[in-house]
Image (cartoon, rainbow, N blue to C red; front, side):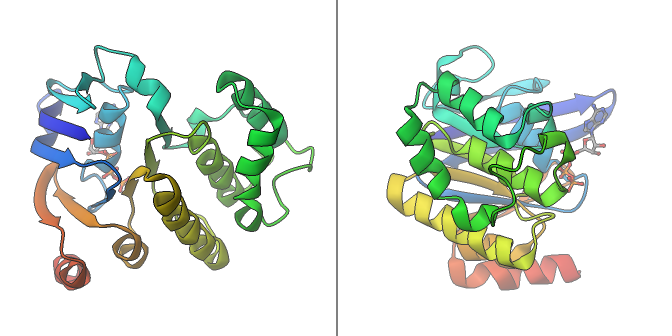
Length: 231
Ligand SMILES: Nc1ncnc2c1ncn2[C@@H]1O[C@H](COP(=O)(O)OP(=O)(O)OP(=O)(O)O)[C@@H](O)[C@H]1O
């Protein structure tokens, strides 16, 4: 369970995030939407302790993320390419993570097997450095890495961005499969309302750092979001 309590983030006078409370139960697929600058990435960065909130706290299974470390072994995330090791090839990168997560070679093989369709023969065995991959392929490496080590919680910032249509569909299937298989709690930010409403159980809409809608009824999500974004 993830609990966001009275989180405020301020840069000088500008308050970019002001969230009273969000509770995310285990195995929920939580979608986060909002226009550019609404605060989605900032909220994710605070949840991962990459940025410190001005006030308030985020708890993962009761642990304050800015004061403890243990939660890190249960959380996977891909926010942007800064999280990758760009001087490695994808094979070298996954092998490095395998050792960090203490997985067997067979575990890694099985993990990457799940990504076979998504990788579309473009990622593994190519001897190409991560820094030279296309934006979409970078994202695929980051997502596969975020899901390594059986995380209980996975945060993905704009996972569909830069993916071709086939890859977007494959990624949706993969997330739904992972959710079924291992009850992962997914937190997904996206500008793609169709994808996010299709896979998420709940969608929070941010506007200028504030939660203005918390949609839990699948049938109403799309129409509510549609009317908000078409203004
Ligand atoms: N280091 C910083 N210094 C000043 N302002 C910042 C900093 N980081 C983020 N911001 C501001 O915080 C606000 C929220 O940004 P954030 O990246 O969280 O939005 P977002 O919802 O993820 O946007 P997008 O959809 O464009 O990715 C923006 O106004 C941004 O300019």
